[in-house]
Image (tube, rainbow over all chains, first blue to last red; front, top):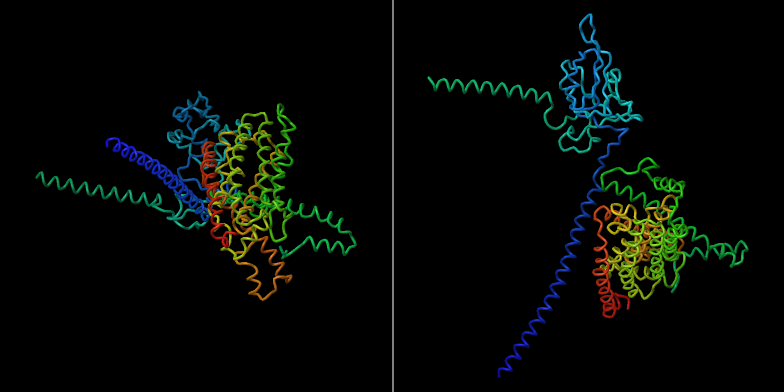
Length: 236
Length: 373
């Protein structure tokens, strides 16, 4: 009797193991199929994204023929006015590597500095703008010139004559099609080719911002005055 | 089998007979013509593919692409080829110069030879060899020898690794490729590419093999991409890890042979996919129906010329749609690792293609009408 029970138990256990093995196998196949289907769906999604790019316009700016208009705060090659300079050497002191060379001599008779030459090596300049920021007579300024390629690095060492030249503006150069940068386009526009020069850019213009700041300041002042008055009355 | 449609060879021979030339000489005169034609067609196909690749890649990345060499940069591939043609031919000092030279030739020749069996119409192929598609599979197995040869002969670790990878890849993807072709052959009862296309053209677009062999189509396409070493399977020449794989030491015309070979192979694979699965030269609506609608007898000259030109246009159109798809895939999928590649080949595609073959065989027994009994 007991022996028989055992046999049944063994049989049940064997069939259970077989069942588990079968289920494991099927589960494996199901997982495998799921993986394959997932992979295929991800691939399709990726392809849809790539295909969507077919209808988008190129964002290329065809450089020598088209150029982006540099922004107002663009830090390009430095402009220098010889006649304004007082040879104070502030620019040298604020420069991270003391780059500007100020060549002056003391005129014993007038007891004044006499400037002979001034030069900045744009091969070493990092265009940080400290010299422009600190120049007491505003004889240094930033231009929008950025095409400083040269065959000889020594030719990048600009003397006061070269520094005094004004660059050709992108907007006035007849051989160049000027294009606006992304931040200067009207709202919703992505391609500068489609924008006419009259379209205003998105957001406030600097002059408008200036007006807004002025009125805002006035309002604040009057508010402050008012609140002060209120306080005064309370004190009374 | 009754030959219908244009037979240019017959008319050529008859014209030659008219000039008083014996049939043997006429045959000799005829022989180089289709070869030359196919060589030119292959090279033009490559030029178009290179241009398409550059333009579509540019569009996918929102660039413009080649623009100044000819209208829309259409002459850019010519300029590339010309540059490679006049470049210095360098053989590295410690390389095996014989094998180094033989390698690219061995890669290119079988690919061009495979154009033998690509039909553009009923009689518009070089030779309707009985073993057709099998010839292509056999020829494409020569390629890895050339790749391995050039990789080994370059005496460069990157080249050797690239060559080994190329050989491993080609060998492991040849088997599922052959098995999926076998399923088609089972349905057609013939290895000839002409028969394979004809079998699909009974009802136009509905009778194309892609509906009866969707799994086979996918397997074939994946394997064809792997055979062409296109992304995502371009790891024999993965530039981030292997510089340029087996091409590393090659320059000038020898490099151009590899370049040409890879693009001819791509066009060839696309053509064969369209032949095997997309009805080859067949128009979505059978031309016989069109002819009956136009009340023209099927053998009238106008219809024959129309059929011939539609055939060529349809074949090329289908092939280039597939090339376009391959280029899209190139910019969508990331490159697989070598272990993933071999896993995919041996553990996924091989069993699935075997199952596909078995299912096709049983379907053929069950529904002999639809599956070519």
